[in-house]
Length: 135
Image (tube, rainbow, N blue to C red):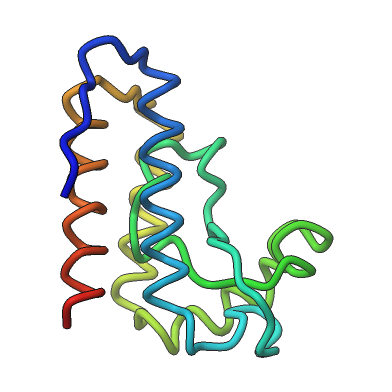
């Protein structure tokens, strides 16, 4: 695996890199699954249940992101009612409750990424991809 030099990267650049690796992992993880919202087998994107822009604390949470078709993700803005109903089948009610709690805590306390947390996130997803590819 190639080493990335993070020293000259800004926080927004690191977020973009983390997004790239996170979304790549989600698409790889869910490539044989249907869209989490509509159940159609289409080309999937990495769709967030809680928006990564509005809930940065959940932006890279694997339980918050699932394979979702472009129609549901972009044109139906996540198709969140169906997403919520069907996410339980993938992660269970306990993990969904944890996501709800984290989202609620963020609303009260806020969250801000730091460069070390972002670098750790990037490397975590790079490793997960390598493990998934070699398993």
